[in-house]
Image (cartoon, rainbow, N blue to C red; front, top):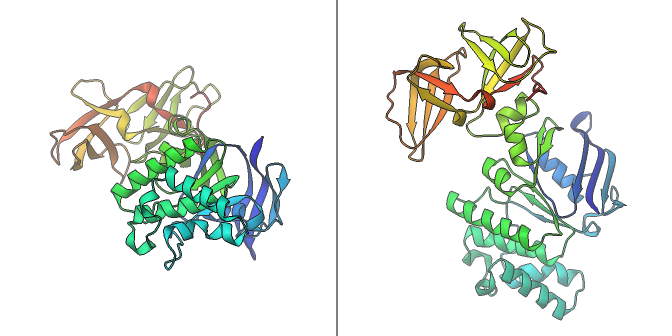
Length: 363
């Protein structure tokens, strides 16, 4: 059974259009992550699913029922906000039980659900505490527990970890991953700007830009086979290096000439491409490595070397005008600012984009 179907969903505020015809099917039990830059519409779309924003056009279906005009409380949805939204004067138990009491559930059913949710989230020791006596991570778990108690068909998470420090983000992300395993039949939709959260939690990622879907797919598919330049540079950190040039040779392989006069062979067929047409090739920072040989992709002077311990980031003045090429090398690398170095990449790891920013289908 399909958990959620969006058909040509649109949203306008007056004359301003913010969501432009979204079509998306989410299967029951899927963990879907919406990502995109600020203002792309991901939180607006989430709020439309929750019923907190009206739908301007299109159809929304949950478990085979159209819900365009169904109020939020009747949609079978529970939402977790980044601000926790806990009642400060209520204990953890009462915060988690509040929605069920309003709905008229029996005392026995309330106790069963709260106890079950507290066990899943390891909140048993804190049920008698007030929110002010909890850490940020514990408060977020209470907010998640309150959502679990509603026994929803669909969970919605709106950047739930953005208020936590780095260590708590990791710990709470692991808790959400465990929750997903324990509630395998419940659909979860998660909004984040954090690459790690998206890549580690999602069954599929939905990349949004300016109110439109750019690509939908499993995390590694988006990483390895981005549909266009936007997805290529948005997925991955640091972003993919893009080097503009012209197509010099086509066939089973493609030869690109860059602005500095160097030529790059990309193992992607482009029989349909025209010689002399503008194109770009992309390479991820982690797919570049140093070489001392005479065969290399490009050479350039190191302008910045960042030693981060587990990795070294080099910013190199290369074939891209006024923009450094970023290289991500494992471990600590003894490199100094001002050195001129040569770099190579596996041709199979290079990406090729046409003059409209679309990925060549040969990839």
